[in-house]
Amino acid sequence: MAVEPGSEMNPASTMSPVPNWLRAWAWLTLVAALPLAVLGAETTTKGVGMADQVSLREPWYFFTLNLKETPVGLLIEHAHRLFGWAVGLCAIVLAVGLQLAATGWRRYLGWLALAMVSAQGIFGILRVKWNALAGDELAAFHGCFAQLAFATLVAVAVLLSRTWQTPNAAAHLRKLAIAFVVLVYVQIVFGAIVRHLLHPHAQRLHVLLAFAVVGLAFSLVTRLRASGDPASRLGRVLLVLVLIQPIFGVEAWMRRFAVPGVLPKMVPNDWALDFTRSGHHLLGTAIFLVSVALTVLVCRTARTNEASVSTDQPLGDAA
Ligand code: HEM
Ligand code: HEM
Image (cartoon, rainbow, N blue to C red):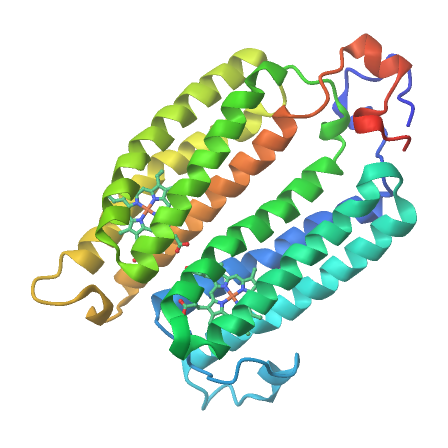
């Protein structure tokens, strides 16, 4: 892929490594997956994971339900499954499209996305099927793997973007960005253990790690801003999310774990409890996904402007 001499300073003028519709499709697949996070979070928060004990239904099953008579919990759980099918279809189109229209390593990105989405769907089915065996553990696993599936979709969209083709001014921050993204994922895993399994060690570690997440976010974003790289725009978003998240965390904590005489699993749902619990889960997802996008950008090829004119073959791609 050649970049027109003199045009490399303007990211928008950098040529796309794949057809525009495929780049747009990668973003569409990601956007289609976001309702899965909301509906999945609400399924857990409202405790309706087993609203339907049949683990596998036809893709169109949701449309056979009577909307007025079906309980809200069952509707949420089946809307979640419906979006699962939709995202699976989007991922198939992405995989076939990239296989046919992309070259080099980009050809395999769609298959990776499809594998992650399919695995997540299978884990969802198993969470329901094997509920009696290890329902809570499987729910926690399904929640944690979901983050990796979303992260793959984000990474694929960013790797296909034009910005990923531009020179990198923040390559020196790679290790810090990778450390941050790993830390956030560990924090999410402890959060999932708190949410599903109520383990006291995870509770302690989750609160303590929150300090590290906020501290490292500040350090990363400050350095990113100093580098002037386009990734620093994401840094600002990250900082806002990371500062709001502990507020939701404390609220979720107080409303679920500090109700006198009521066990956490028995606390009755109301809109404030649901909003703070699902909100905290979703903000955690947003923090992780913005960190993944930022890290993928910071890890792009560290070409100088001059080098990008003479050769434009990151990772050996002949696209
Ligand atoms: C690409 C497909 C899917 C994605 C990305 C996804 C994502 C998620 C997420 C993010 C949650 C929230 C976890 C939490 O709050 O801790 C969730 C929960 C859940 N998902 Fe999925 N899911 C997918 C497919 C499925 C499928 C196919 C099924 C069932 C056949 C399913 C069943 C469930 C159930 C039952 C829960 C609630 C778990 C609980 O009891 O707490 N999911 N999912
Ligand atoms: C920036 C720091 C934080 C991040 C990224 C984060 C992220 C998360 C995530 C993603 C979950 C849900 C995990 C899942 O279901 O898969 C969670 C659960 C939880 N977090 Fe945090 N958290 C942070 C800080 C805090 C703080 C400071 C507190 C409280 C002092 C807190 C309290 C909780 C509680 C109580 C839960 C369980 C909520 C429930 O039962 O629904 N978190 N956290």
